[in-house]
Length: 484
Image 1: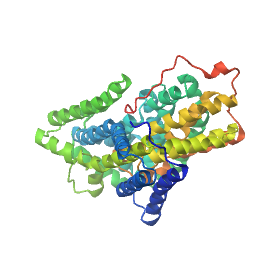
Image 2: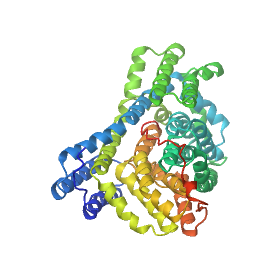
Image 3: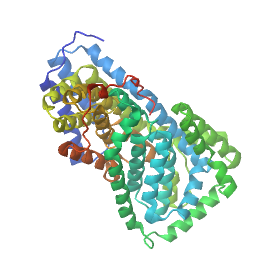
Image 4: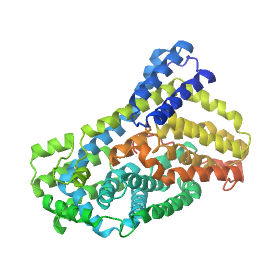
């Protein structure tokens, strides 16, 4: 990296970021489209012109930023592609059909959204991975919700709320460990601090899920839709109780391997291949069929439009739209990071940190801006985290307040921005765009609001008893950006 380059001025940095925000706002207001590919390309071109022409930034540094962003994206996008391969394998194996068949008979439509939130939160607390939760229980719940006639956007919102709750409080979550390590605090002290806003936000999400579920109270679900669904599933898949249990093996493998902290990419591949074998042995498919399904998506023609829409999904190719957003978004973020745009913006924000209220609010805004600009939740932890620690020490505030603020800002916004890594992943796996499920991802909205309230009122803004309270020599800085 060229260490002698001139960092861009505040004016150039603001122009670059504002162009991105205005472009996306104009697109959403005028056409409401989630297709942000070209918008990201235009924003990247604008940034490159501003940097290279007006700031004389070397083009080699821009290229380094693109490579850096692409490197961050690669493993995550590979996981996403193989989840596309895994989903049709699960459908053909009977995993998803069995869960839908028995789930629609067991789960009350009224409490389905509540159940979805609880199941995903417990899964993520146990495994520490919101992505793994979405790829397993999330996919199954989307199918069950579809069978019950639940709005897919509501189901996806409940899945995201539950997954993010678990991700923020699990001691084996990568974002938890990265946030605590960045601010050099004990992991469990960090979790206690995060819980002050996350638990109330979770309660609000549960209450809202019950309220939304009332729309689907007894008598409003079309029983004539459930009957044909059950008949079609039993006619096309071997889902007797014994075979249904066998079909759950691919999902169980994902959970067990995740708990054992097995490599995420390898876990998805193993689950996909296991599903393929079960489909061939027990469901009567051949290898050629499975190769086609896993590449292009599962295809079935039952004569029922709703059932076909429920089952015809997945495939490697179906994920490439989402993968391209991931690469474009993180490449753009890499440009801003490596050329010093983020450093300039965050350094200028230090002028607004004279008291605890301003410090916390400024850090939250910096977290929002960083995730929006870079599309990477990890960058939104690392950069604002290290930039504002000195401010907390100077004011005598415990660093656990700083570490939890990282979770309450960038991490909460990550699933909502269409170009952000988390949103790209969730929308790709669940099949619902962030613009559709965002209003129902209640936890992601409630937690930042509560965090702002604490900052303004001074609640849970703890002072240190001595300077040594903000030092934790036993913590290691965790910088793995691809283990989500």
